[in-house]
Amino acid sequence: MLNFELYNPTNLVFGKGQIAKISDLLPKEAKVLITYGGGSIFKNGVYDQVRKALHGYDVTEFGGIEPNPRYETLMKAVEIIREKKLDFILAVGGGSVIDGTKFISAAVQFEGNPMDILQKGIRILDNAIPFGTVLTLPATASEMNSGAVITINETQEKLSFGGPALFPKFSICDPEVVASLPKRQIQNGVVDAFTHVFEQYLTYPHDALLQDRISEGILQTLIEIGPKVVENPTDYKLASNYMWCCTMALNGLIQKGVPTDWATHMIGHELTALFEIDHARTLAIIGPNLYRVMFESKKEKLAQYGKRVWNIADASVEEMATEAIEKTVDFFHIMGMQTKLSEYTQDYENTADFVVKRFDERGWKALGEKKNITLEKVKNIVELSY
Ligand code: NZQ
Ligand code: ZN
Image (tube, rainbow, N blue to C red; front, side, top):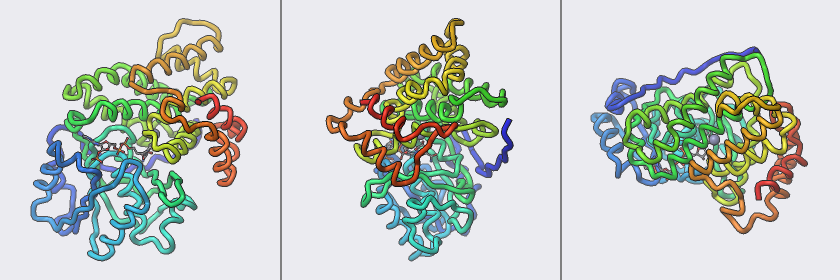
């Protein structure tokens, strides 16, 4: 097993009716900025629960954080915090609101141009405004990790950043929020979490036996409950397992002591930046083709996944690995994904060249767990995804 450090200070408060606990988690004298998205929280009762729990607090609100949150929008919240000298942020929403809040938290006291945080990928080690979250969409695990992805409108770039100062102080995860989610968002959440596990699991055989078994457990659970929770989002058993799988897929645990890939996400982010395709759907387009192009490099792990997760009968490594990719594509289809870029846009022809040029400019010339996903391979992967 590789050496590792496990640091995760987020107080995760999980279960029915837990939003009422905000006042136990937040210092009484806090001057709070509530951040939210396009208004779903007003329709599903989450806003009312939050405001009730914040009775007596000094509260300001900032709404309008978009899916794929925009730098330009977030900077407006940064100004409000500076002006009103607010000292705590409460993100109420999905991955976009939480990611956006992480950026706001990092930018308020940042010395220099906040855009550098994104374009130079500056790690945020301190001086962040503390924040908590009320999760309304299980998918990203942003509620229990220290990373975020922000889009700059001006340059059409979608960029990741993070750092140990950006763990939420607490996150309230009430599975009852799943009831109001549109089917499309639940489908996205399941596929995003599924792919998070892939990025940390589908690499090459290694010595971290427990991490593999936990990863396989998350995948099996998502396969079991994913299609059902889309149809029955009010079923608490399904909703709570869906929510916990998503958090566990990217709260850092399964990543410890193992090699990781992340190239599907890196390429996928470009498709969102270019065509505004939902994050999870970009992963469903790219992931299977990445496994096809990198087949030689990943076939042992693909075969293990096929055997243990899909119960594929014993055969050669190549046969089991091939079937495992097919099973994955079938599952993505069952989860409502289209898996070809041309099913989302007719404007796809120069995409491979565009992505390669961007990666080249950023110096991303060798991706993946073995650094063998070269720019040529990236081109093959994207072209195979048309
Ligand atoms: O904006 P509102 O009105 O709240 O509506 C949202 C939004 O339109 C809606 N929604 C959320 N909760 C709801 C609800 N509608 C009804 N009922 C509810 N309970 O869902 C829509 C999508 O929300 P969004 O937050 O964009 O979705 P998601 O949680 O999938 O987040 C996607 C973003 O997270 C980033 C992605 O790149 C993307 O920008 N990621 C963040 C990661 C991280 N921080 O670790 C890792 C991921 O790989 C990912 O890259
Ligand atoms: Zn993701």
